[in-house]
Length: 492
Ligand code: UN1
Image (cartoon, rainbow, N blue to C red; front, side, top):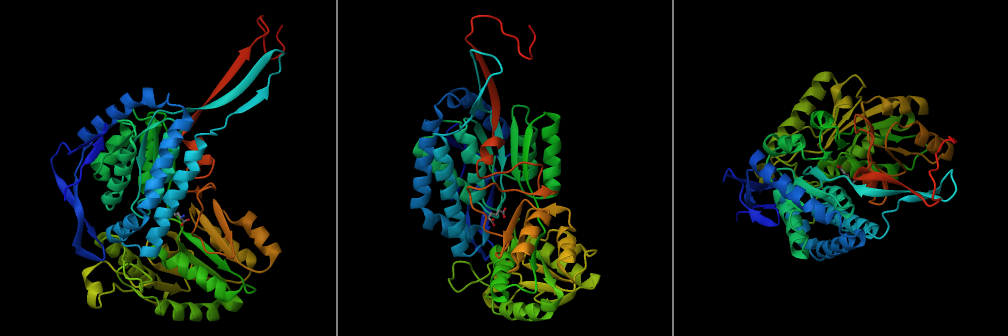
């Protein structure tokens, strides 16, 4: 089956006439469809369509824009099971996590749809009599949305829904690993009758679509989630045009376990955060910092539990860990593991491409744990984006915090402790945008700000109320009803 781009309200082929296929990382013989290999010509038509649609869409009252999003949320919810199965087939995450991804999209859409009836600005007194001052949100214009494959439904909703409710129009380039999910979301917008050109879907790779889109002079804002290297490039394209650029990038998220922690609880949190989605979340735990008195016992328990994790096709309910997204990532993960061994870390478990039986067909990597990893090792510092965990001992709380902060990234962090003083201090001391206490590093909820500091981001936060700040301009209004020219700052 061949799928098309959605531009100006029409399903159209790419100008190149070329297609690529999307396949199941657990079984490449399972093909999800053929998708257009678009390039800058398609970007051009899509931006034009978004530009044409802007004048009208930005004037639709926000509550009406929100009503359309409620319809989208309803269809997403109705199709949750179908979309989840497609997601597992397209990028591999186990079915229960795929259901979570779709649910996150449903939640985000409902949450933001309701903003159509709020979209609050504020009113404040004037320093002069008979004068009213207020500030309202205005749309920015045409927004380029560039999304990753690891949350093929949730992350697009984080970016697209706030942009639309605020009155912007969007050109969306989804990851080329997950075009089918992108198609399914765009189709829902088509079904609810979103006006032509308000959302445009252009499928293709980063060089042919992402870069020309980010560089396009008619694009006023770029909203990107992906690697820090690409984010830096995108920031430059945006800077040249003085665009607002929202970036969500890498993580090297630590879990600290202190000696007073509930170790069973910590184990559950570590396994879920390190090996859920095969470690392919920007919030995944990839560093484990353990207070010395519990270092050995915790690692022993962890290795035992990790051994029991079942690798397999995510559609099989018995599977704990699915494949990684594609053979290129698989190779990259293994290169990091070899590097870890060369650097002198102690391989506790895993460390191999999994090839037993059915697994040989797909891109499977054994859940891997390194012990005695030191901060100068690249496996401690660099984002691997796979099921690889680096464990390091810490002599006390202060050293644990120093180790946790010894990274260029700053997305998520966690501490397991029963000591409320220690927990409260960690909330202040951990240099990340998100901190969990007695829970893993993953599982952010849609109505709170999401994002990170240091090389993880550039200051913005998506989700929550902050999502609206990302995709709105402020307009400040002064209305003088004194009937004379009043001058501010006491000038008379
Ligand atoms: C991501 O990995 O890019 O907190 C986003 C979480 C999810 C979102 C992760 N709600 O793990």
